[in-house]
Image (tube, rainbow, N blue to C red; front, side, top):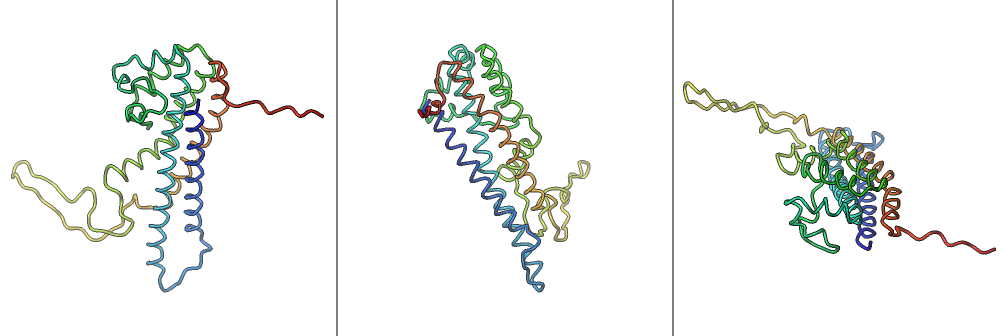
Length: 251
């Protein structure tokens, strides 16, 4: 229960930090900002980089919040012994050693994304919820599944994959496009490289990056609002108190 409370608190902080960064990005996008007419191109470049940096900071916290939220749902589900048996049964999950409270094992904190660890989030956890026989846990896991499948969350996850694991689009014009400059002639066994003029990367658009950030902030917040009361319902069914009732005032 202490770990579940701690996760909830850290998720709230992550969401607040994500929102704060997005708000700063909005300020840089404000058309009312005074700009020196003689330096517009330079200012636009700096502005683009600033907006992207702030949005990427926001999405960093958003992905962390989504990851923590998924692990929170996992740990609430583990509070039911029947569900815990299903979760711990697969060979792959045994490395987590039962997801013991306070553990720092990497395998006990599975990654939550739109494509990774699909077996755990899309199959094992729903099966565990069904085995629990508790409606609250079933609804809790179902809502988490909806978040994983949400196109707004998928867009966030895919953009993060582009920026972190592949080649981040440059904010300035450059002569190094990701594709289209190299070809190979199988008959002649000849490689050809074309030199190209400086051009903009279509994926550098700071307005697009900001929209992905806003959409993700919205969908993750919506999931948190829906999930919060289900946590209390699920834990209550496991004979655990999520929060104390408000004390009655004697008049």
